Length: 78
Image (cartoon, rainbow, N blue to C red):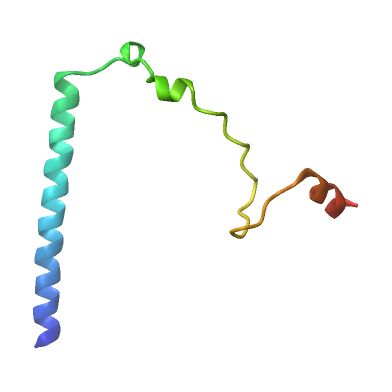
C-alpha cells in the first residue's frame, strides 16, 4: 500500500514540476517574441573588456592540485 501511495505522490510531484517548467518556457518565448534584442546593439561591459586572458585548457582533466608544465610534458614524451 505504501508503494502505491509513494508512486502517486511522485506522479503528482512530476506533473506539477512539468507544468511549472512549461509555464516558464512559455513566458520566456512570449518575452523574446515581444522584444527581440539584436546582438549588434548589446555592448560589452567594461569588466569584460579588462578581464585577463584565460590560460588554454588541457585536452584531458587533471586531478585537483596537479598543474601542467611544458617541461613535464617534454620529459614524459622522451
